[in-house]
Image 1 (tube, rainbow, N blue to C red):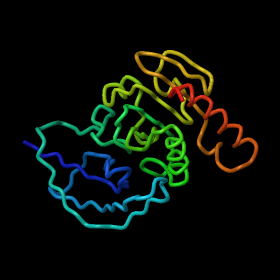
Image 2 (image 1 turned 90 degrees about the horizontal axis):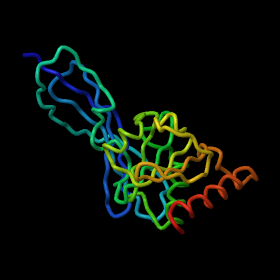
Image 3 (image 1 turned 180 degrees about the horizontal axis):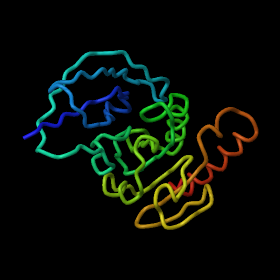
Image 4 (image 1 turned 90 degrees about the vertical axis):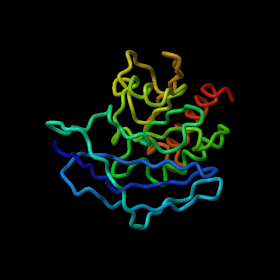
Length: 213
């Protein structure tokens, strides 16, 4: 019998809203020793609005159980770790972004989304924030894993989520017992210039429809 080991990469843990703690990690099969070392830090965010996320290394150890014999090790979306999103999914709202070089989302966009959620009488504990770049889940896979009632997607298309329809940006659409809203990249909403203000206004008007505000 052969033994398959896994290695956990660096990740960011955010302790948000009422100590709801969610850890995201990626698991990749490789030949490694039976023990691994994971560096991680939680810096609690105690203010209502998210101000920053920082990480400093803290050494911990985790044991990896032996797996059954297999000819090869493959990582697929179906093997996505349980805690593959940021948040607590308390109200079954999937908020999807497309961010590079971060596990979930960069600090600036996280604060903006926190403000948006607050305006909608929600917080990060109510949602599952998924970085599509790291977890390219189609809707059926997303439905199996978190059963969202609402999907709010930034910088994504219906094709990327493997949906059988197309809709304009900012239009609320019902499908398969779920409500969908697609919006442009969060980068287009940065700043106070006229174009950014226009996008924010469109987003807010759509969110009022989506959440019945």
